Image 1 (tube, one colour):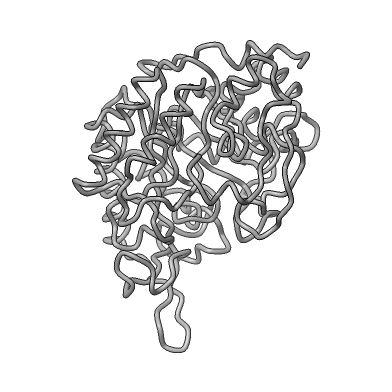
Image 2 (tube, one colour):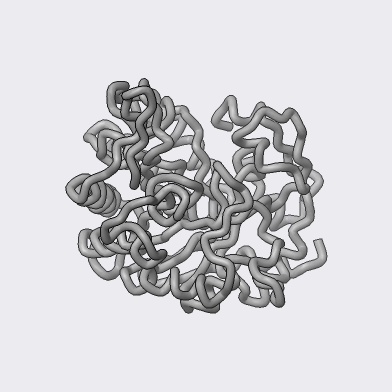
Length: 370
């Protein structure tokens, strides 16, 4: 490694949030919490990463306390005494190793299918109703529904603060509920929550405002957003820097402290005429710290390795280009996904120049909490 690796291992501070390194564990759904309760193996999974140089852990997506929030089996809840007690053990273990941790607060929205736990009779909830053969597959959310979901996020943030979490991340990306409101293709509403992008952003803005009111001025709020969707990798919410600035400013004003800018490959320029990626543009436009993410530390294998069925093996790759961009200040923090999922000591091995010792990733890694 020839680039200045030290940039990744410098501390970061924002208000009361102090991170020992710039390495962030990206949120990755793991399905290892039966009944929605994180157990001892989940505690150890996160502890190992904190012990090995990860400055900030963003947990796997955790569902807020709304009946339609969940879309997958064995996903952890972030509500209820048992689940919160489990997360408190995670927090204590991470802090004991010198790391910091935030939960990713999640509502899947219209992605939910009938038959999904915890109540199989509850359909997906989304901006627009979807009916097939006389059966409601997606319940079009009323204004009252919107306020209930906002209240659930605010309560989850209060609970995160109460059990000692270091902030929260709001999941506004990848075609889930908040993003479904952003996206014109999924939001056909004719009220104040539909129409222009400013109106389609109203739900997210009100949600961030409610979370900020719930936790006070000093508790960090991270907001994750993306251009691409699981349903459409080529989707573009905005196509110019000017439009991106107009989209982000109200969210920033509402109380977002850090933007987590989800891309599939961090090195791809976001707009023509500039080498800046999405995190770089977001930092420039908002003045807020940003997290970059997207195939960090692995060769150019497809993202479908996580969600799809390919048996391709992703090999460790140089991060010299990323380190140079971090050192220049294009973004502030670096989220690592699959490379850190398969190898808890990824950060230490990078720091010590032991790239050859990093484990390759294959879908088999998803079968255990290593």
